[in-house]
Length: 156
Image (cartoon, rainbow, N blue to C red; front, side, top):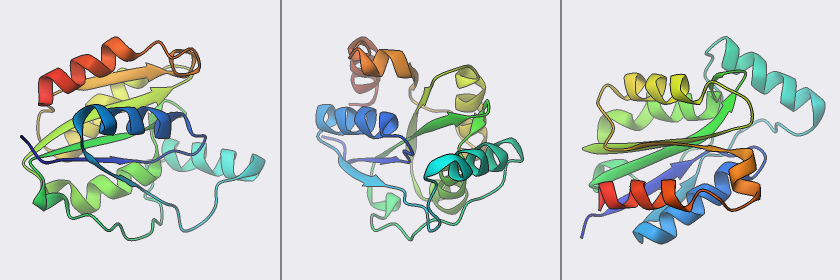
């Protein structure tokens, strides 16, 4: 069986829920990317959108898991202002060269998911084994199982 690591960033909890379900389905280890500066409230919301729109890197805490020790790295984060969330951009910049294979997912409430997945893939400098985008509505209504099953089937 492949050794799999799920790494995610979640501001609101939607991406966390999807990441936890993916990790459980793949029997994978899981690690959350954490900001050094909090993103709560209105100021945190606007700062998040600004950083994403300007493709800035965020200050994140050092992660514990070494992606080089895994066969597959599954990365996930939210879409902010139609762009990749800055904490996931930072993680990819710091760690994506250490893995053999990747799968990517994002969560979103508006638009831009396909572009964000392509941008994540490009930043990782390799083609992903699987790509899924899950809407906030699908998460609220627990209607993304087919997408999750397809991702798991592809990588395991």
